[in-house]
Image (cartoon, rainbow, N blue to C red; front, side, top):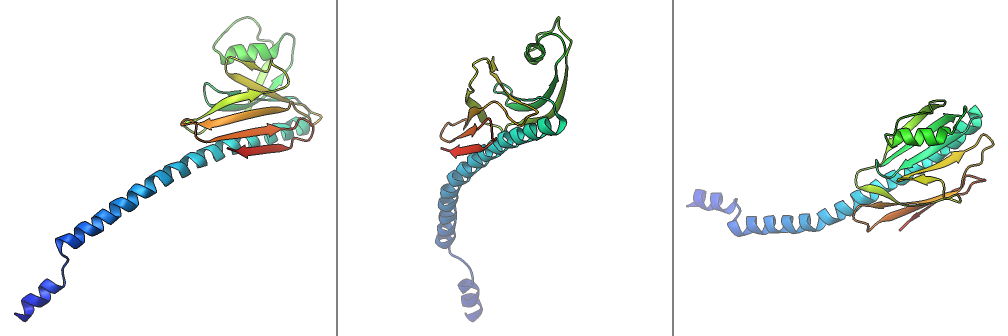
Length: 184
C-alpha cells in the first residue's frame, strides 16, 4: 500500500495537465499579436534608417568627391539606389531613368556609378514623396540630388507598412541636411 500511494502521489492528474496546456495557449495567443506588431515596427525603423543613411552617405560622397550624387527611391521595386551620374552631352538623367524602366535606345553618352543599393524590408513601401520640383518623380521613381557644395534638394518621404497601421515620415532640410523622422 505504501509503494502504490507514493507512486500515485508523485504524478500529475489529467486536469492539472490540461490546465497548464490551456494557460500556455492563452499566453501564446496574447503574445503573438504583440510580436507581430513589434516585427512590423522593426521593419519600418529599418526602412527609415536606410533612407536616412542613404541621404547622409550621398551628401558625404558629393562633398568628398566633388561630384553630384543622386538618391533614387524606386517605389515599385522597393529599392534605394545611390548613384553618381557623370554628365556628358545629352540628358543623362533621362537616359538613366529610361534604363531603369527597361527602355533602351539612343543616348548612351553618360556613365553611371551605382555606389550603393539597398532593398527596403518586405511589406514596407513608399507611399508619398514630395519635393520642391514636381519633375523629381517618374513612374514611381523619385530622386534627390546632392551637390558638391553640401546642399541637396529638400524632400519629404512617407513609408508605410503593408497593413497601413504604422508609417514613418522623413523630412530633410536642403541646406543643413537635418533629418526629421516622425513615427505615426
